[in-house]
Length: 168
Image 1 (cartoon, one colour):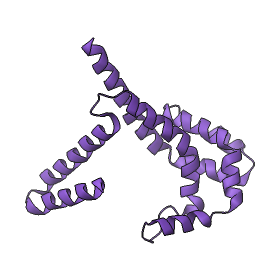
Image 2: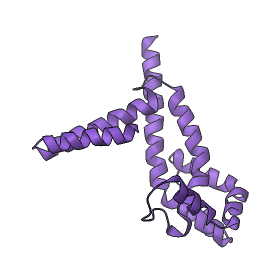
Image 3: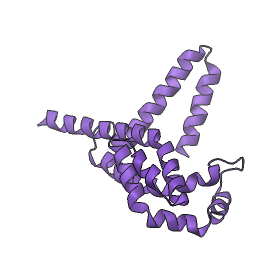
Image 4: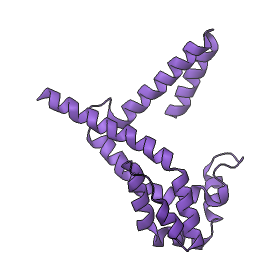
């Protein structure tokens, strides 16, 4: 609901003001400040970004291959729980089995991307299992997202540590 309220507020601001560039700047700054507060309590919390990082590191290897199954990341259907469950039910069992059996490989590649080492292309090329190769390619296609999220979270951790040390 918070995102919906923020969208309504930004839309009202956008419609009331005449200078469009200034409106976009206000909206962009508002979103960034909101996310900064959500991720790390404005640089005061060390624990919050660490927990979010751990959750994302362990969930990315599972979610990314599932979300991009057969390239159907975003269909034109409305986003609701029924459509989501229907989407997940249509993914074949062998696809889930492949994710579970190769989870360590996917986790290793996610960790490499998260800590800015890059996904190892040799692992993708040396894989003979076609399902695993497809899932690794999907994970590699989201490397940019993993890297951006990690930069933000690691930056928040470093800012929080710096603030703690300044107080002592």
